[in-house]
Image (cartoon, rainbow, N blue to C red):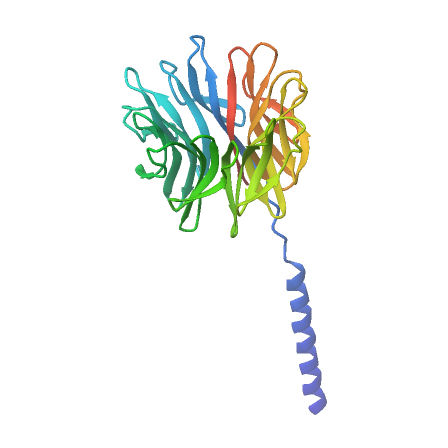
Length: 344
């Protein structure tokens, strides 16, 4: 009887172990995300020479304005099925209104009494944040709007500009610059300014937050040339070597990799360029001026939006891993200013 019980126990142990091994082998790894849709914001002229704010989704254009007045789309941000675009739209007989569009419906942030511009948009926790600046009658003042409620960043002592906005937790970061006797590169965290460079002309364009690290990209003048730079926690990192003029417009941080998009001159023209950890990749051939304005990454894929020139007209484009995708046909001038990827 004892031997029978022992046999039963051993059989149960073998059964349990074999079942456990079977369960372990059924685990399926989560597939890496892939790009679902590519959104690009920018503008294109119509036959009357007026700029129309535009959004391209996978290369298909949607007009955000009617072309009766001037307008531009400067940034795009997508959350679920909602597409947000920031820019400005002229109002007839009034002025330029800082505007964002949600699913094509315009939301004016200013009254048009003075010119105002929106450059960047970020959505967090159902809240819509937009950065830009508004003229007060004598100076441009950097501002941001949260759900339409304004926070003033600059003051009337000098021109200030709000270029890019990012929200991390409860903190709101806005990059930009101040125009005193020279351009001061700076950013604001929750309304408190940090000056990044004030001894020479310098500006910051886009800001990015990765963990506890704050990155801002732009340029600083080195006397005869502009140097493409980014600042990490206030410490400057030179991206270009100063041989030719260069500037940064957009920055993305992916793990240990830092990507910067912008422009770098050759002997005669500006070349649309991106840098990965300081290594430059030219996106245009340098025969005509081209510029890169926005960068996005997913895995090993690098997407850059900007403008190229065909010899007669400016072409809105984006490049995937260096291969160009034209968004406009060259009939009229067009420019792509912002790119956003959604994933499967």
